[in-house]
Length: 417
View 1 (spheres, helix red, strand yellow):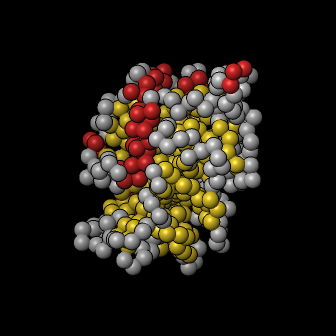
View 2: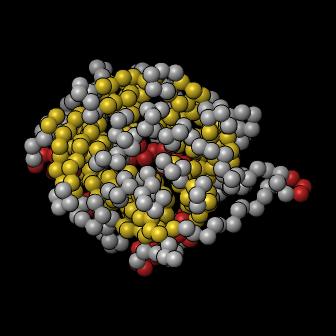
View 3: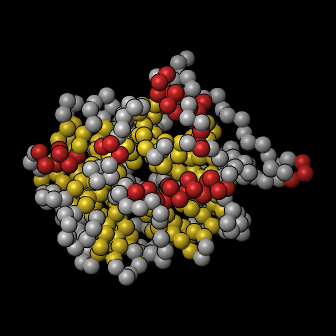
C-alpha cells in the first residue's frame, strides 16, 4: 500500500506539469481526531464508524463513458461552475481550457476570449489558452497560456472576468500576468475564493524558483515577489486573507511555510512527532491541511495544523493518506488508503462512497464504482468549493482510467426528511 500511495502522490504532484502537456516524471482541534494508544495495550484505535449522512452528493461526468476525449477539472465554485481542460481524442497537442456551467454546453474559453471585445489585454495570435485551473466565487477565472514558438518564455498565465446573464457568457476583461524579465516560465498555482489574490510560481534559468502574488483586478495591477524557494514546490495555496501556504523539498522530506500579507514567514511546526509534512491547502482562519510523515520514507497520514495548537491526526494513524482541500466551512476532502472522504465539524467523518450510494443517476454511479477501485482509478486532481446553502461545498476533479482522464462534478444535495 505504501508503494501504491507514493505512486498516487507522484501523479498528484506532477499534475502541475501534466496540464501543460509535458512529461509525467517530475481551525480547530476536531472532535474526531484519534491518537495512538487509545486502546488497552497501546494499539491504534479502530477507525471511527461513519456518521449518519447529513447530505448526499450527486455525481455528473463531463463526457459520456465512451467518449475518446480526455477531460480534466481543477476547480469549482459554490454554484457548480467548474474549470479545466479538454484533450480531444486524448491529444495533448490540441488541448484547450474550458468552463463548465451546470446543465449547459462546455465553453472553450480561448474561443470566447477571441470572439468578442473586452477590456484589458488581447490574447496574441499564435498563443494558446491551454487550461483554466482556478475560479473564484465571482466568476473570475485563471489558468495557463502557451506563448507562440520563439517567445522569451514557454508558459504564462492569465486572469479573466466572466459575465453570465443566464443564457450566454461573455468576457468583461482579460489580463496576462506581467512576466518578470529573465523568467522562462510562469505557472498559476492558486487563487483566493474572493479573487483578490492569485499566486504563481516563476521559474528562471539557473536561479531558484520564486513565488509571486498577483492582484489582476486592481488598477494598476499589483504583482510582488513573495519569496525565493529552496526546493521543488509540491503544493501552493492562498486564502482570502492573503496568506500563502506552500510545501517544498528539504533534506529528503518536506518543509511547509505560511507567508503573511505584508511580510513575514511562519514555519508550519512539526513538533517532535513528525519527520515531514506535505501542506496541501489553507483555510481563511489559517488552518492548514495535508499529509504528515512520522518517520523518513514512511507513508503519509491525513492531518490538520491549527495556529497555536499545532498538529492533530485525522482518523486512525494506521491509515495512509492525506487531506487535500479545506473550504470556508472547514469541510475537508481527502483520501485514506483507497477511499475518499469528507470531514467537517458539523457533519463528521463521511466516506464519499456512502454519500454517492443513494443519489445520482445509476450510470454515473456505475462509472464511479464498477472499475475495481484504486488499482484502475486514480484521483489525479480535485477541488472543493466554499459551502452553498446545504452547508457543504461542490467537489470537482478527474480520475484516470486506462490512460484516459474523466472529469466529474459532485453536487451536495439535502437528505429528504
